[in-house]
Image (cartoon, rainbow, N blue to C red; front, side, top):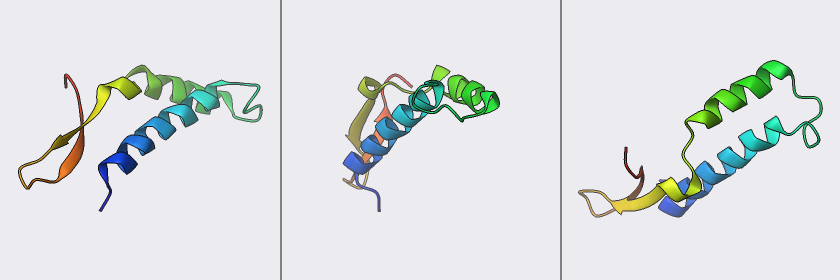
Length: 68
């Protein structure tokens, strides 16, 4: 089972990875098609501040997005 802090960390790290794909200095060999797809995905990707942890009905915590 994924813990809430692990899920939040995964979301933040995925966002960072997509941002790095856009940086030609950090990732010089990435094809333009991949960069364009990363840009499209980031357009609607949640910011770190939009991710929060909330309890579900069973008392466990889960990651939800605010204002969705």
